[in-house]
Length: 483
Image 1 (cartoon, one colour):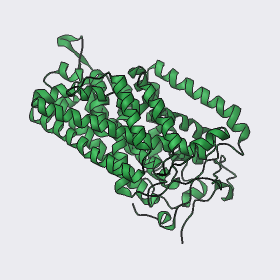
Image 2 (cartoon, one colour):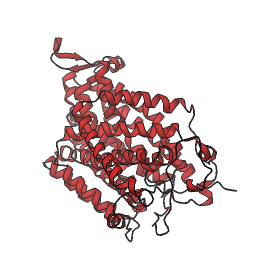
Image 3 (cartoon, one colour):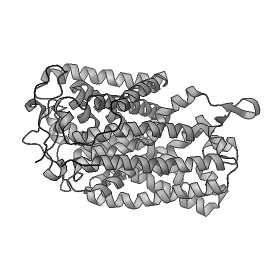
Image 4 (cartoon, one colour):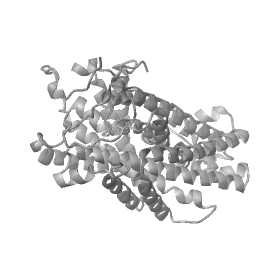
């Protein structure tokens, strides 16, 4: 006997609660193939977190503003992400859709909330790949000097071409690259600890190079809270398991395993080298400058520095491949769920011979290449606000995940519910309120435009547009799990 996820229109009426988003599985819908297990899914998901490229591209920006408080900020962000991962795991096993966050939120909190989380997730998935890709130039410098924007655009084009391949082939490609980037992170950690200039107490010293007495400024609690938006972004890729849930075998079991394992592994891979760098930096000024390649060369020699730099460059390419794969699935799912005018929906839902949504892949990769020429600080700021807002809406959906028939569905269930989503909602709302006004305005303006699109186009066509679908699973994938 198996439990099936039926369209909500056939479920018992929810007379005392807000109506949930209707689910539909159109007869002409093309389905993604279930072709990867938990190992392949974990490799792809870890590659999307891309620990080494995050460590070498995003973390230096935190070092410049937070100094020795960087490790503490990332640790707090990782702790918050445990609660977020619980929400993703429960919702992802209830709603195993390539739509990811928007499918989950639409089902639990209504179609407007789902549409807004889709827009926020689309911002993230469009911006993050070029942000990471632009770091390639710095780490190819020992071999060739390139303009960061052009190097990033080249990486995005290569990632787009790779994204058109079969998903199983990409799992092997990204797995090999992942090994190299973990090795690079390990080398940095070993060298940093071996050349420690300060003790563990420096991790809570909360100092950054500046204009204060002795050239040192104190990092305030407000700066740490502000930095949490980027710290959440550091491990953000663990959600890829939810996007791949339609292509994971046994999603009711493997989605939760992949989400939680990926978060734990990526947090260790990122946090341990950050601690080592904090302790091993020659001076506070060197730490604040965040030039990790220069630190590695100083701790060892130019050959080791070049090896680490090239590993990081490969890690960035790896990240680009996985992010293009993930992001194309989001567009594919939105078209299948009728988010756009009919010609656009038909184009985005087309699958190539390899099983990849090829038009959606191109529409992710090519604009990503163009975004490599946008100001990097703006991209960072908008991404931080978008990720925080998206997690906030997912936490709201998790708070509603046990209403009605969903409370009896076969799914992984988080511990400490409803305390976990309630605390997350409060903390994330506060973090969001502490972000810079410029980035809040940019993101808020996009959300306003998206709301107008909903009000003027989607809502008047509610019977034919934005019909969030959840593909049927096989019997084995619906079997209750003790994960």
